[in-house]
Image 1 (tube, one colour):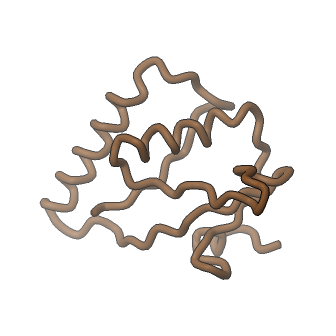
Image 2: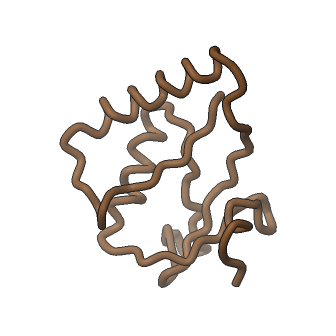
Image 3: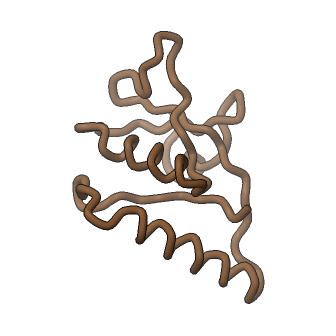
Length: 105
C-alpha cells in the first residue's frame, strides 16, 4: 500500500486510500456533519455493502485544490475555518484532535 506524501494523490477512481486506526467513527461522523453544512470535505466512499471503511482502510473522495494565492483566497480560508469552528463547538474530540481537509470552492 502506498504511504507518505503520495497518499493525498488520487488513487484509482479519483479517490484517496488511507490506512487508519478508526475507533468510534467520530471522525467520519464529523466529515459528514461538515458536508451536510456545505463545507467541502472528502467523504468516505462506501464499500459494496455500505460500510464507510473496511477494517483499517478508508477510501475517500479526492478533492482537487490548490494553495491559497492571494488575499481573496486567504479570506475564504478564514471564512471556512470560522464556519468549521462554529459547527464543531461541543463536538467530541478524537485521539488528539481531528485533521480536516477542505476545498476552496
